[in-house]
Length: 396
Image (cartoon, rainbow, N blue to C red):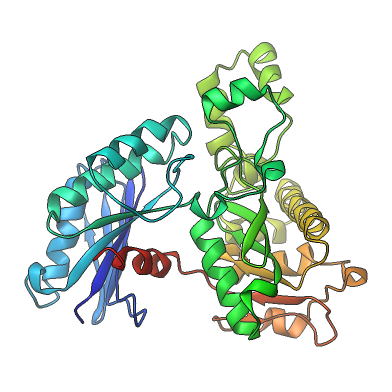
């Protein structure tokens, strides 16, 4: 393990993803997941250079889980102070209007992120816990926040503005913020490098497709639009989130079904999307149901692809033509069906997927468009942890 490593933390409400990474070489000598925090069947998966460890048992809180991770890092053969951690990078979801650059974390930043929980109630409170615990356990290195919303901070006003009463919007911070920004920025840069093109001359549509999903239109490195909005709920169909929906549905559920705000919130964030339509939110399980003839699963897949195609078409129009479409995220990188079907029928728009390239085994950065396609279609694995590490080390 070399000096100059960064510990990257992504703290969720009941889990913490972690990675120890060298920001220069991209080597990751250790990474893993703490999950089911606060439950009796907690689990830590720890991957390192010599193998994988699994620890089962109750993890009562985030502090206990993170302390256990630090002990495991020490177990790699050195005391923790010699491991070479020069900074801790925190993935933070919502920065509001205030945070749009990597930010050195102090007490005021922690409080500000907590205050922004009103805009991201599922994410920011867990981010706050992660910052508090990590700063207590590693007090002698800089802690740096990298915000999901930062890349989209400079969206054009026409894209960022919702058509509601302007005073109400200003008073309550209502605008399109966008999310997955670290991924969209990293992947769009890697796409330019793969194509050996100047980042500043490319029009790109980036599709980050995982359990959460978002699309972006990027012109010359500058985002012109993105599918997620005030919160990570808007836009594409996701694993458990509805994406775009007529706001009138919310009032109807309140008046006709008697559902209160919290019930509607849980429905749209945790009980909708693929899960709401089919009963499952994992794409492998969804495709297995489709193979067994499940009509609800097939409809869920069709709705997912239809929404995706609609956004691709909209962003083509906003950009006035595109040079490349980039798939990333767990679904985007691994699901040949989604890539094929979301671009099917777009040949007249210059978009042609090569079936053999799309279905070829193997990972890594790759082209899946046909030789005669006017638009390059790429698969670029995202690496948000590396991007966060490189942002954090600047403060070390």
